[in-house]
Image 1 (cartoon, rainbow, N blue to C red):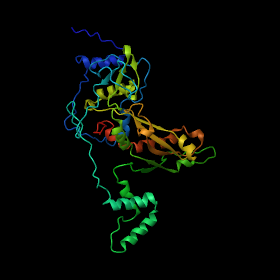
Image 2 (spheres, helix red, strand yellow):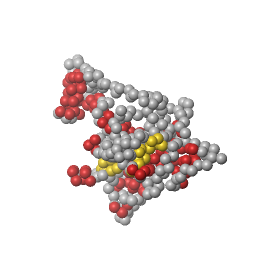
Image 3 (cartoon, one colour):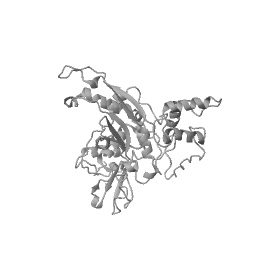
Image 4 (spheres, rainbow, N blue to C red):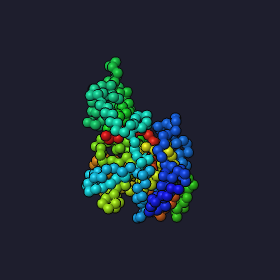
Length: 382
């Protein structure tokens, strides 16, 4: 009979150990390849909103004494002592770092196939100096820059100029101002193009103390946003973050084995979520769990401009180290301007009022859904 003398600080650590190290008593968590034919990207289907309720528990909170420091070999890989952690802030005083062994961010090729260990990264593609796509040539690009940025010509005047240009049996560079704007929006480098949608309340109407239907129930509100998934892809792929980003949850121990918390991925929450995901879906093994951090602060807008019609929404990712998580390093990015419906302060907390804001967040977040449950391929800093 085999006797296990492993000790644990809580029940969750015991359960993980039993399921991984003692497969006769429970299901294991060993690395398994994705099922044959599993696509790199998958569509969650029409029931994605209902499916979000079944996603891994994102409401678990980190509590004192709740960490599992059992050093279960099936769940952690240990880096060499003395490795510098925390984005260069940790020092080398004998620190030990454990890396989650299942959601460990294994490098892969463009098709999602794991690469052999120590495979060097592919060189980043170099753009041609003569590539002015989506413009036909340099003169067309500079003309667009002149119209849009230098003189900020109105759409009507651009249309008139293009008509004059074409009146001499010569094709104008742009059909009209919309054609010009579409070319600018199609530029694949630089800023992400803005998108816009409108929201309005479609539920049951109520009346206020004066017997009137609140104006916000009949109004339509515009929300302007950048694609959040593209923003996160740019953040995670930023070559400036090389060496300052974690692709797996980690546990950091200092002298005497005392647990240290330095970056977001060093906390209990990130590790616990990786356990849940890896247990529920073996096809995620080798992927990276990327937490999305979002927040809104109207203070800067109100103080600087006096504008009270919208809330700016910002997003970041939980992979970057604390020293990187600054707006001036592009790890925190403006993603949307949320509308602020005007109403009586007494009804602000009502569900019918709050649904406008919640709906706005869901709509602009739809680009996440293809990789919400199934891993996608992402370029990372090397």
